Length: 113
Length: 116
Image 1 (tube, rainbow over the protein chains, first blue to last red):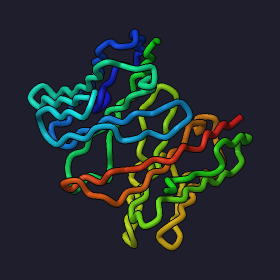
Image 2: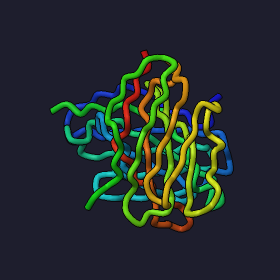
Image 3: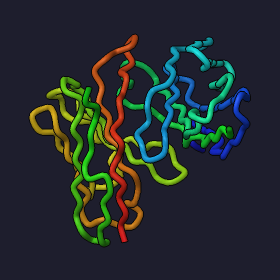
């Protein structure tokens, strides 16, 4: 079993829809949770960062972490065609091992105009 | 400003040949990472350099893989006697900023390696 599980999709939604992307994990030591966006043939770019449980909002994006369920989510409101990309969740255990991120396999999202 | 750059962007090689992949991190970033991304897989950590400390090589899959970082800047990932299963996108990232102890990693565009 992988430490981080992520549905690979592909996920296709109409423009304006609310998108929900999720990851589950098994390592209870994970404290830092991130979402990266990766456009085709580009490197991943950090989209959202969350420490421990709770919610964080940034514009149309909301990241949620539920450590009790070992479940994290990324919500995209009013999705746009420019949001079409692969979304990778990533997590690490803390400063001592912050250099090592464990990634999900990514969910491919297409937002149709 | 200049981001992380990698070269070549694409590399096709024959099984058994050696390849070198290059990474130029963001100027001033002390930490440098190499990852491998295979089709349908997440990013697999390979190696980490931090300043002048000994590198963390715990992710290297075999002794055919090695990496160096010269002068605390440019890094080269070398794969000897390449195998078909080495075909993947090799991503480099660098970091400086710490957010509550977590380093923010900035990724390059990757080198797409195909071993025939």
